[in-house]
Image 1: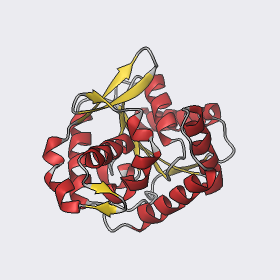
Image 2: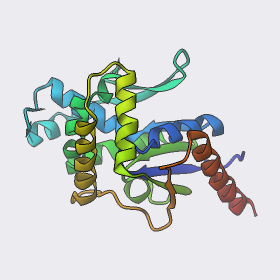
Image 3: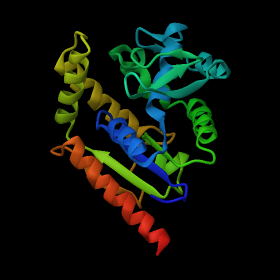
Image 4: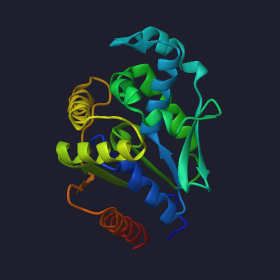
Length: 234
């Protein structure tokens, strides 16, 4: 659409479809997609494997000390047509989406040193190219000067139902009530943490997708991209 490298930051609550929208935008625009949420999930998975977290316990210092062991990257999988997360060269895309990771990802991502390292890796991956990135502090912390900021939200019950269906379709045995509780707890942690809390950037466009299809969300977002490009080119 333009030769200008545009940074698009998508923030919002858990299970709002941020990643789905971000991936669609990246494909449509020919941009690089960086899944920040997957990065924090990968750190959480690594910590679970090392037994630094589990049974309600989190060894914060071991996680901090182990950050130098963690390298996260992304590759486009042509066979599945989806972005794939790699942890130290291993494809962990499916494993990081399991409920065991979801239960710990918010407190792990609230650790200041974890966020600092992830921001460093995110910025490194975004050099010299147009990007789309989603998460909870992309427009406020990682890329506060992003060209376009979108803040996504939806009712907790609707988000829980979407997440429930997603996990059931993958063959996982889950209860809707557990997912709703997890989402409400994550909302509280994400919005109340001291380091990089989930807040809407003052210049963000709000997208409440409670009753919008994926297609409608993509069209809405592309219209905002077009408006921003026309603003730059006028």
